[in-house]
Length: 114
Length: 109
Image (tube, chains in turn red, green):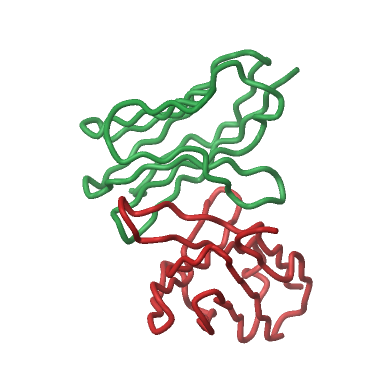
């Protein structure tokens, strides 16, 4: 089983709809992140959380919100989806232990907004 | 200026070739350096992780960091068709991670 699981893997929806992407992890990491990936732009940070009570905006948080339901669960919501939010979305986790352990990624959600 | 610059390629090499992938950066606060491999329709997979200048080797892969020049490299020896993927460099200050845009590599049998 994957250490970082994202659901759904694919989603097609219409402009104006509310969407929730979910992420769960079994790595026991405190830190969780949401990124979007667009061709030519690379990975851009949307939101991150260093523990259950901590939520921080990233580079491109407008139009998105998040919820950290538990150490293992971090969800991303698009309150009113628009076409330019069509992208590949990744959840990642990391452990701030010795030497700042690197991030580990899920396999992504491919989101298309018509 | 972006925090991390990476040539997007695409890069195409014959099987068995030595591949060199590179990134430059501008932030002296970066302390941790990573290389990820991403196959189509999959998430980035950690390949190499280092926090010091110099070389780190793992099988056919060698990561090189030159903090004085703000330059990192990934070398792939004896490249295989299964190495065909997009390679992302990443760097961290300790709390924030910054990614290159990725280099697309194709290894031709």
